[in-house]
Length: 225
Image (tube, rainbow, N blue to C red; front, top):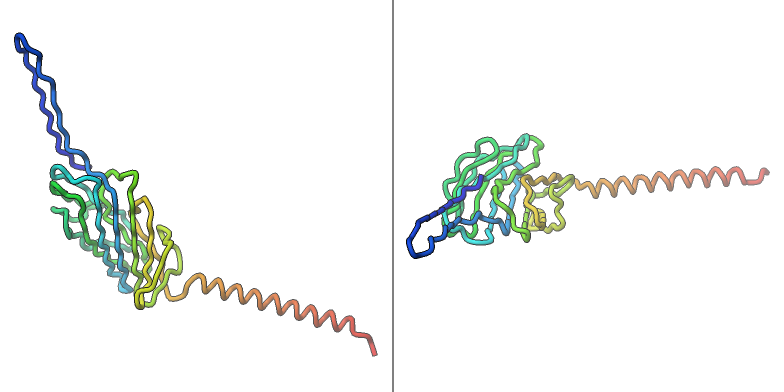
């Protein structure tokens, strides 16, 4: 649960000839997430790197305990979760969560994750903060594929843009929701090229059938000598 510092003061007194003092209360506001910028670098070895920066709507007014939630994924393990800036006391991932603290005055923080994938696993879990999200939340996710690889299958979320950086393809997704898992099925042969080959094969078969039909028809219509 999100930590919340609560200070409540209540003063009640009876003063002859004067009004009674009113109660006063102060609460530290819970942090609200305004922006998330996530950069994922995939490696053919399965040793991936995630660097994520989260920005709040307002600076924290007191130290706040926060949970970082990590969704489980078969064949994938978070081997390291470290603080880069703006966050302290990150503990080990226990089950699906890790504890941390946002110091007073925090406006944004950055964490890094090291991921180990095995076999054909393609999912990368994100250590998302257990915080309320602003209605205007902005999320930007980039995924850099291994050298010589391209997106060939399913992805989650859907990547609307991609560009080339040297021998690597970079995918980009912009939205207003923060996923707990990112999936990009990559390989050396795209599904688009497979579809093109299938289309050409079908076209060739159709042309061949039509040609056979024409030849047969012409032979039947040829007058006998």
